[in-house]
Length: 262
Image (tube, helix red, strand yellow):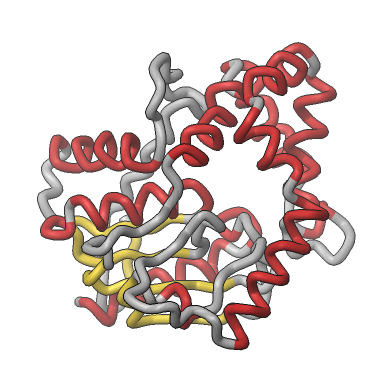
């Protein structure tokens, strides 16, 4: 239970299929939409006919899909990330403002420098998995490099995470042998990206927390072409892993957003 003076809520944290202790998918199609159906079914079975959503990374994509598919059950959606596969439905070619052009240039440059991991995980997940699942050093380096590159650590990873936190994360993948099933998600998403169709606009209230060291995030005006943004916060510090890096900043913004809807 989390609460402030004006709002309180129970927290349900589902694990994404194929990650950690969750079941490994054995069939194709374990993408955002597939997971969205599982999570919604879970919430209904737990007795939550109305509930709110919060997501970052892959959880953001799943939460967006839930909001699209089951809007009548959703109170509001809070995000701290949006997938680079996100593409809203555009009635006209009106997505060429200066900020959007600048973002696309930045995303292209970022992918050239940092996007190799995504390409191989999207196209050759099994080939990569054999090597990572066979070598604890290989697995550790593959995972820790991202914690280092994507966090707001000022050149020292231990400014953001303890060694115990980092090694616990790697160990979870190693002991459960889920590196393949987790990176397979990238392949599934590449086949069914977050591309909105005509009636996919999310009308429920959406809040967004933008952390300065997050991997490339579209400008607000582009996100708003597909999501009903009613709350936007530019945070002073933090990166791609805010629940670990800056938990209080993230929690405070989530509470602030849902206080508006209370």
